Length: 384
Image (cartoon, rainbow, N blue to C red):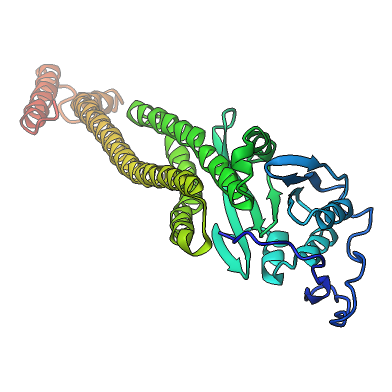
């Protein structure tokens, strides 16, 4: 945690260096700092969600622009500024960075977003990146958002990239608890962490419900369930990336309790958040394992279904072959007398046995013998 200290009269904004935009030359040691060159009255209107100044846990000012916030904070050295930004422009973030002497690397991360959850210390300023989530009921999917928090001795700056979490609710909660807000920026960081972690609970419940539905669909043989398992598994990978680093981050904060003189009550609150994060991380790990097992079971069931279909096709083919054998056998049996009758039906004058008295009975008997012989042969071969 950042140690609380008295706020200097001037911040020396000329020390800030930004590699994208050339900064103003540093002022001499015996010269006063320039009067907010990077924060004109028009800067900070569009992306500033809310800006407030607090003293002893009570809001004392609600400036409308960043420049007014900077001036109010200079007038009240014992105050604390809490500035909330949503997708700020580079000019807005640079003006804040110059005023509060934020590190260029942290500012670059806050501008570009798409960072992994992390906690870094730059002098007496903490830079925290969090991945907030919310569960969307209609599409049954998880919405991920990114939140950057700068915590200094007398300021808290939040940079939000996404809809979650609802920091206005966090601000109302803290303003309703002046004893907690009186503890300073560290207490605000706790409240933000607590809100982000509490936001994981509905997501966990929604995912558990999805997994229950998927298990039912798997045993029903729904053909679309494989796609749903794959999509939910990908979301679990992202969810795991959002929650797992928080465990180490909070343990890192707890390791610095003694060094930075964190209030005992605040230590208990942060330990409670760490417990919730650990529980959520374990649930997410369990979800990934469960989805892997469900995918294996689904693949087994699909294979069994395919085998059953192949077996049914094979049986149908076998039955078809048997029918073809019977038809072919009877066709061959009937072909023999037809052949004899066709030949003798040509009525040629000189044909063998044509004028023989027993020619007709002999032909009939011959056809009967041939048909009977063919029947016996096909019967023995199992074709009939």
